[in-house]
Image 1 (spheres, rainbow, N blue to C red):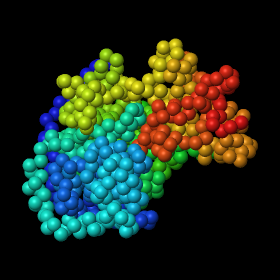
Image 2: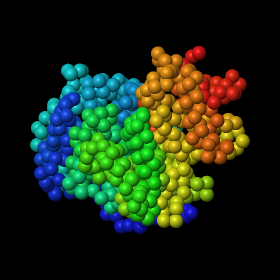
Image 3: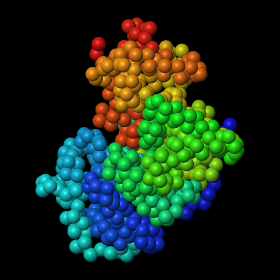
Image 4: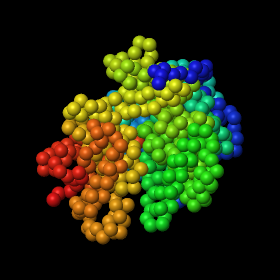
Length: 616
């Protein structure tokens, strides 16, 4: 193993405005953006001319509203075309935008608005607009203008998107006026202020400069083969830097960007849009895999056989490119009976997926690779704009997040923490110089808070979050994420969190896949009227006891000894999930503290599986 890796490269300096003008100047007839018309499957397209007109109107309207370079404008919205238009308008007006997840309640939004000192807000719907007004009031910013994409509903204090755009048109500003102004834009100027979603600690405002994001777009574009004939389905929150940077990259390269109806409709939208590239967090791939493997009878046997073929074929192909005659024949049969149907379900044209934001289970990567749908896993953080590593299409190594992207250095500290240095490292935390100094040293190395290792070729393997490591009462260190990842492909497991810090042994909190569990119960004569009675049934408890047996190869100190079954899912609403579907481990343990204590109590000393929070 090595403790240092780098991919030296000369990266050009530039701004996000440069990216915009480079794309516009290339022209072309393909749509830049697409979105669904209401709840229908009809796609509405925006070409270059209309996109430019809207962006110019937004930039001009911001200036007409009194905003200038360095002022902050919040965007409180789900992923949609207007989000991107507002963002580009802010960029050309040299206004710093502050994304806010549409799922945040008013009090949390207020903290961001106040800390950032915003003087303007874009909101997606009248409901979000009303939430913005409430949050602005709590933040002591009453009177700040709020523009609503879907119209104001005549609500006092809200301005409609159409009215706002008309203000920009009346200003008479041209694209060339904005180009001339952008020519003086310093790449080291802050472009956006992104508040971390906070899986641990209080969210902080990450200052990303034009140079940070521009360099990341260029470097990632040198690794990922993206063509101007490609199309993509964009559905992750644009408030998250991964989807936003990727959208910049795809826009710059000339792809068509289609927006999903909603993150909950992605499966159906994939079939309509038929994209060639999709970027997601692992949760999407887990759901697709679990849906495919959720079968019974003959079909279950076929799918189970195909999963085995996928594992063997992928390993052989990635190791030496030659799986042999028998395995090749098995793969062709599995492809015809199983894999081809998966490709059709995602539109039939997909060239590759990209995964980031959380660890991807290796078995998922093997399965999708065998299905002709390679998942290129990458790594990064909000503070790194975000990409530091990504697997190349040629030379992918499952279980790693790939080598550094061009211009990036990686060092492994003595305690295993991953350190990053490169042009994508943030300027710092807004208004928090001490917090900035804690994570960026004098030589420019950023402390990621993640633990990992480098192989001899510079491919990075993430072990866990430094703060997530479990230290048992016996002093043993246990990395929970790899163990959790193994269970995410189990058909009965919807969500899983490993616990055990300062305890005698590790345990699991599992939210069952209730749709699958319900069918299993019906097939096995288990009668249950609701989730609570289902989880208390001895047969169900026994079935989950078998889940523990799948981890028997682990070392004794890291092997979970108990399972606590939960009847309700972790969610954004209850504070246990971030908007990008990452589990907030501390909040899970805080909310379920009493039940976790009961799991470890003498009352359940001899019970391997316990139904928690269901009474009885």
